[in-house]
Length: 248
Image (cartoon, rainbow, N blue to C red; front, side):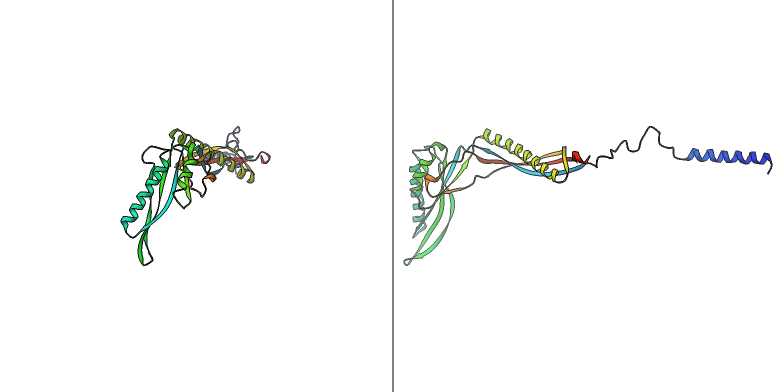
């Protein structure tokens, strides 16, 4: 091989090498580390969803007393007359406590027939509701109504004040959030993690809580509750988690 051919071959190799380097992928810059965007000491983001329902309470300001009854007669007309008479007796008992109209009203029932002493009798089982606007004399009224029936009375306390109901709704939401956080703390600790924030919080619908029926055989046993459940609210919270301090 002569010197001229060596120089030519060397030039071609240099050109090929230069061309190959021009089409290759550029190397990473020296001041940029691949791990800068991800901290290797931390796991990927973790999330936990908790759903809780909270309840809001308020002081009752009214009540409904249910007075059961049963009447029977040889005809439907006789049964209806006994119903009217019983309602009149209840209205008379209520009058010293509440003079407004609409205090005593029927709440329905069911009829049937029974054969007794050679006669077919029509009977009707139902109840009257007595609406109590003033709870300060509630026990006295309950005692008067109990004299008009042999059945156990039942009471449903209510909250009619709009402002009190709205306040109970707000407390129901706050109680739901607090309950969700308590549960999240317990689960996070058990899983070896900790809560570092809230990813998402959604409020559910409000629900008016139906008054609980309280049966009483003796008026002296009846006590108006200091507070009753008025509203419920559901909350869904997605918590963000991170490893516990000792795991980092």
